[in-house]
Length: 194
Ligand code: UP5
Ligand code: MG
Image (cartoon, rainbow, N blue to C red; front, side, top):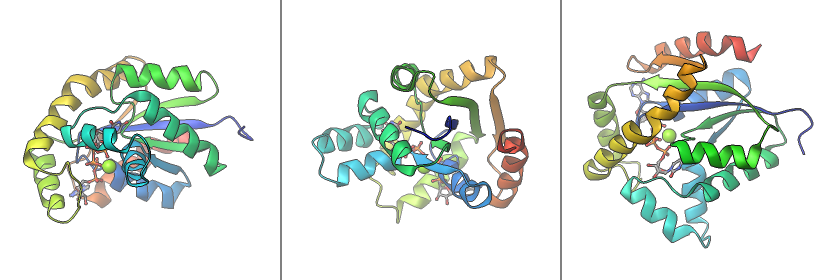
């Protein structure tokens, strides 16, 4: 159990929007715990878990892994951190993820809202193809990137819209250079950092 009621900011944005990059900076500056759902899934795959092959297949196809797997990895990482302020990066990716989160977390965790990085497809494609030269990520290839982009538009944007209607989206232009995006990020999260 948590010593204090945990609170969470979901961090969303298309593939290559800079979610991971900005979260790392926020960890240094504001003491959040950063949990990337994608990183947790990649680590789970590498660990040789029973779900490893399934995870590898979904990631290669740019598809969303069954929520039971992802939420249990998130819940475990949250509990093991011993901390209470989290950036949950790259999740929830669709309505079903969101339902799965609520089913497991219920009212035990406060969700402050969504930090949303807005960057056009062309810029994100360039970034990912460049990163793909060295990342070793099986999904950083032109074919999978197109699939990831489609899933983001069709399935993840509705989650962003849901929070937008609640007035809970911190929208940030993620196209400028990293330092500039980070300044905008700090301004956006000021109300929740307290
Ligand atoms: N870069 C970053 N910011 C820049 C800037 N301002 N200017 C110039 N360059 C910038 O950045 C991407 C690249 O751009 C880097 O090279 C960086 O240096 C540069 P990064 O910070 O890594 O962007 P990010 O948004 O984190 O991109 P990522 O590729 O991680 O996003 P995805 O959402 O595609 O990846 P994720 O790891 O979240 O998911 C991968 C797959 O896992 C999914 O497709 C899915 O199959 C699976 N998954 C699930 O099934 N469920 C989940 O809940 C999560 C993932
Ligand atoms: Mg990332």
